[in-house]
Length: 280
Ligand code: FE
Image (tube, rainbow, N blue to C red):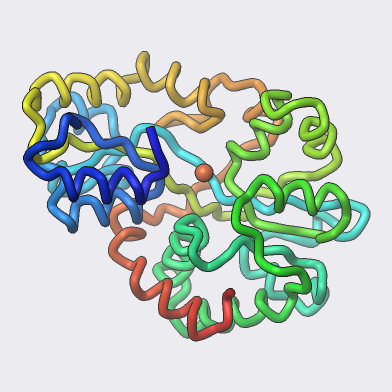
């Protein structure tokens, strides 16, 4: 268990000497990167074709989604009216001047969100959107989602963008009483339609137990295995919203239909747009 980029680097360096059979990563862009580097082997599976929706897996069977997360707006209702926010595009509104907080450009979550908007709205509209958001930022960019949620709760920002499981973790009390109280002060707004990303897994190219590795992935993606995995992680299962009571308190969402593989493929374009538009 380590950070995703470190795991990718480790398996890449170990190559045929790696003890790893299965590589589990978060974010479609990272799964795509591991595939591009040749770390994952195509693993056809009738069970996975059945259990993992088409939009949540690699077309060559190198990786399969296991859980879903949504990048949502967290709002301090004393500073910004939650009802004034409906889409990601609303975050570029001049009404939010000085009120927006963002995580940094290096965050793969933000890169995938920008890739998603490029696929939905085109590159020019997305570049304008990013510039509008950057103009609304008054605080230094954050390096992770949890401190950003705390800043919104404290009123240092009116609104920010974070992944659902970070809010759920705080709200459930898993992060301690102080974070629970912070989370209770903010509102979650699901942009409509919403950018959905995944955690996922693939069989490592050099696995010595590829059949068992695939069985493990099949189990984790199955309705039974997936339920335990997604719920424990405060994530959504591959279909539906699951039974995590904290997550269900946040409300429901309408996915925008952009596939995970598309997100990975558009990552380079997204990073270029973010750099050119001044996202720090
Ligand atoms: Fe995360």
